[in-house]
Length: 112
Length: 118
Image (cartoon, rainbow over all chains, first blue to last red; front, side, top):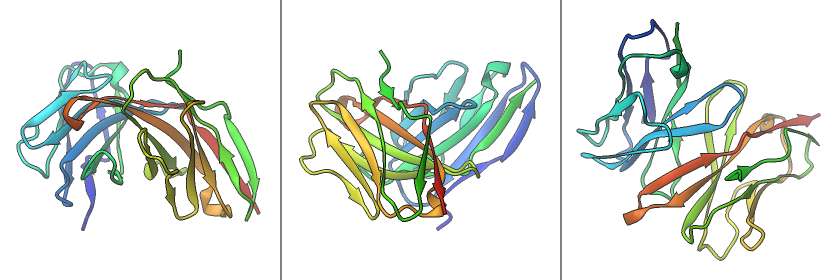
């Protein structure tokens, strides 16, 4: 099992550009999450999904969109990138709310 | 009020000793979950342990245990027999219950940096 994979590992965007952060898990997990981690801080939940076709907003959804067309994939879309979106983005998954949560390696995004 | 409070910015512990990392939380929900995560200097996030608000027993996972005191709203992480590889940032987090078992909100603390001394 590869676990949770994220691409790309690093990316620099110009203000106003768009991009998609990819997240894939091969553990057949129902729950998937996107977090961001700003320097010196804990994680903040952007969006989550409890199964294919079901997504919902977390604490900081503005400026982002997600989709969950398959169990495996949970891409995060940034439209009109802003410097405030400079952060490290983590994708995670688990089978249920009480179960071990597995994280991807993170994507370090810089918006200039 | 802070939802999750971790009052120890940094902690030192001697190798093979036990250490307690403090976490207090604030919620009016009856159903919630508490988590601890480890983040080494490499930057990866590692899930350690989970405690549900209705769980009667304290959660344990190997050398990690969660000292859950519901009335005091505390969820301290205890690491027994510390190892050099335990040096990392440790984050406490809370999930406040949502409808149909989903999540409404997940809040993280600012973390505690643990250093294990040989």
